[in-house]
Length: 548
Image (cartoon, rainbow, N blue to C red; front, side, top):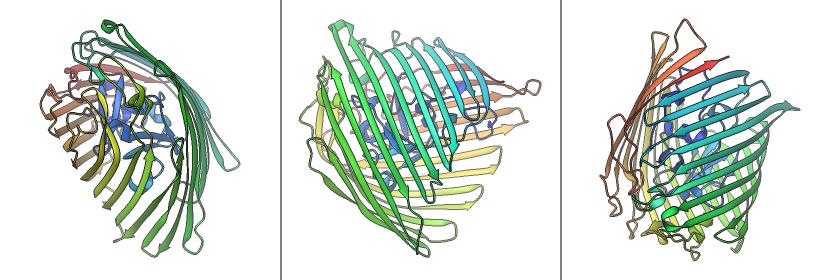
């Protein structure tokens, strides 16, 4: 289920003067196209169109961000959300070089001069503090969070983030450099499918350095290249079993992509990427290489744009594959577009799925690479400046999809997924924002009882509202309602309804101060985001942010 945030972190279209200091895995909870299944406050699985956590990922300036050992941490980037433009959930043809089902694509935003401090506290012994500063070209952030008794009595969290960021223009280019370090220690009782009564603990250290250079506008002719180096140290222990598992992941990646100028209604989309990953530790030492080259010509015929090409993918221990890509956009009216696409992509399972061996879970080194075939047909329309909507049908065929069933990483064979999603946004004034999103998903899996791929919402409804009134107050409400597919591994209800209600106050006598209040899990929902996972109780929190 999509959990919600301490009031300190809530944002609104009406709060432009204050920076959004959340890290991206927190900000994703407001995106209707992404389901965030959190284990406490420490670990966040992403799901796009009913996918398991291994089928959804995150990219930054076109480069896929990964933790090779475990896709459980694929959503993490410990930098505040105001460094990035609003994310775009990419599926279909736009996701040809991304994750198996979909990718949340982030793009760095222009820097602004700003200094902001914030702090917050909440019930269940929650504390948080952030210091953020940015000039036109350079800035940094320090973020600290501590919480006790998050779900189980022994499940606590202590998190420390530090980061620096540089952005500067030169010769028509924009250059970005980011460097981050995150340390987390948390109780993991009942996490990852182990029994609720079994206490576990985990520590992660995540160091990431990222570089990007962009020339041109991304919706026109452009060229962009990005590169990253990442080291992720994961130490997991179950004291009662005298079990520890420590693995160090290293990941290096480089990407270049672009679109040529349109000449006589013809343009060319090009992309190439290369990544190397290596793990070492208690699961052994393993490494592999993956690369791809995409060539995608496009032709424009008045109101129709047609694209067709190939994506060549090569991976260690696998034969090179030539994957077809095709898409069409038809401007059916001045403000409405019909679109259709077909794409394929391939990925090897993460190392945890292959090699983990613990008291309650066992990986499967015989799992084969996964092949995803994605078809999409949709319509989007901007009826006015205050009203837009979209609807799409999709089908995904997954060869060698996998899930954790009975504590064992299991090959599901060929999995067929069909669904519909639709969304509407209504913005009657600059102070009011209303959105709704509905999704229906069906899978034909024969095996059941899994924790992720075979456990998904058949029906999902997200509602959100933001209203600024009396020039000082902003009220926010968010509701996620879902009906989960039947799953024998689920011990609780298949129905979940979680909501949050928050209030921001920007007093006139102190226009550089914002006070925030929130009630989280407003209805006291006991829905298990992952089968067997203890839900978080209703909590209240308050926060204060100060601009300098």
